[in-house]
Image 1 (tube, rainbow, N blue to C red):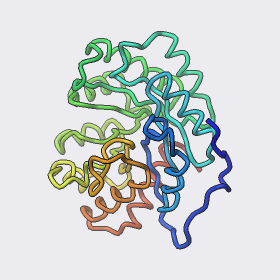
Image 2 (image 1 turned 90 degrees about the vertical axis):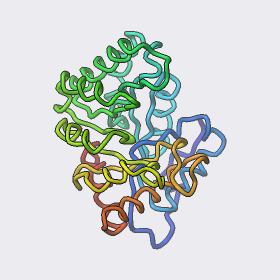
Image 3 (image 1 turned 135 degrees about the horizontal axis):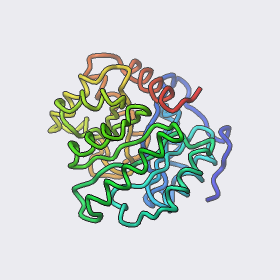
Length: 273
């Protein structure tokens, strides 16, 4: 990858004061291979000052690190996705532990359970999940949780592994209001993405009103889950602004306030200045 690694290469538009932090983006996805630099510039143009690129298998982890090394304002998370748990080998855990000391790696993940895609048996998913939680506790790093149709088991495993000792992010939160408190009790931040803007997403809209201010994060999960009015198109980090605007509307506060609190929360979690 031959990107310009200089922060000075980029510029912010005049008048942008509200800075956003996209806490979950896959700039390492093939959908951005041809125009990654332009995508990053569009994000900067609307005030997305920092981003976390998430790796979840060998290829995407390597590229997440490469991108984070190339841009001052981009960080990386490294982990093993439950969909790919069937491909996990013991040496991958050793590799993740080595990567955890990289200066641009600020979290482990995404990890968790996925009962939607029938690619990895549940027992293998659980084993890989537990091993990564244990590693995160060993290296004292927050974790990023992928949960699809598996909330009860995700919460149970986090409780059994005492994951509250490190905490982390419930990425693209899709569970219910009733399950919210269990996640908060486990010392997890609640990250909301494009679905909060969908007109029929009543439950997540209610969640957006209830999350304590100091536990609220925003993300895109780009290139997936583009927010309204771009639903169905390729998502990109610039669209995190639409997520922030919707949450501000739902909570009855200013857009500026959502920018401030979510950026502050992300920096606190990732231990960034």
